Length: 450
Image 1 (cartoon, one colour):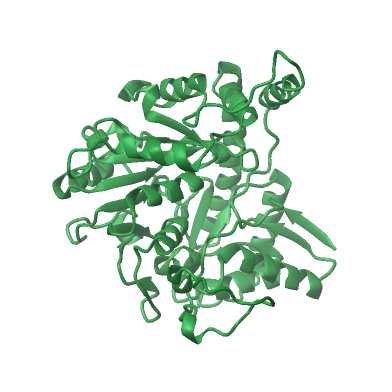
Image 2 (cartoon, rainbow, N blue to C red; image 1 turned 120 degrees about the horizontal axis):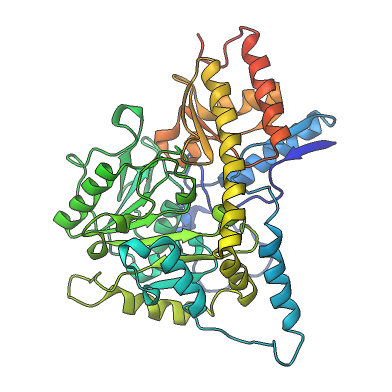
């Protein structure tokens, strides 16, 4: 059994779009033990049955059972594959070794993060927009911060998400109690506003017809479409939030991949500090998917409707629910932001961007509609008239390549697949060759070439 995989782990918490779990009164006992008198959180019953990446993992294993000698190439989950630059790894190793000495041992750190790292993040990424180091909260990753922000905001707020978008925004909204019931007919949750993205609107929602919500989740560059919002688009978004008194939760996890003059931070837009929180991560920037390190910026100017500073409540959430990021990981973060470390990381990012270019060129040469892959490590391919799970299955069956069905990111991805550029170059080239071979046979892939 051979497997050429861009990753070895499968992330959880990203849901599909089919059926809801039945209400608790209609669910049969599934455990083996005696029942307690504690009812299940009813919001979990509103989550859909399956989760995207475990489902993909299951299908991959089934495929390998069917074809035990197949060399499967995984371009599905967005996990980094290239080694962390040596100087960064050494900084973590040295810190860990120092813990075995009397002088080097350290226990708990500040919940908000190492002060030197907070300062380095502010100076590296926000120097031109005057973000203070005290507004930076270091964490164990942006996905964890999404849930902390949901706890901060509570169940009564209304939310809007891009469609398609990273499903963690939706799942956390369901669990906290914001989403309402799932509508099978539309593939959407009742109380969530889905802001449609596609080539017809340059992957930016039409805000003139978007209803007001309290919270707007917005990711740029977007996962999965790969589109980086332009300065003009983000100006419209900030104006929309200011006019409506909304708060933007801006996810800039892929900002390091931006290749043009698109803003890398929402705070490049005047007025954003009064309406936005920014979350970001070292995961795709520095290959820290397993190390776990990220940050959130909460400006002092951001106020709740009653005038209370949001930063104070977020600080309380952090101090109550979190003991701070690993000191070892933070040592690595500091090394990433040194001149030598930053240069080494940029070289790895360029490697992934070249992978993306190879994939984009391959799909474009086959006459397919392809988006992203320029300012993001994801390629978004359109198969008009087809269902994304059917595309996924056919590509896997005929080329032994793992992709991600677009419907896993929302109903707006129903005719798309996402391809990750995280992988070894030889695997990217091999995958491109297999795809070219598949299409060159002249047989239609589902409905896309009919």
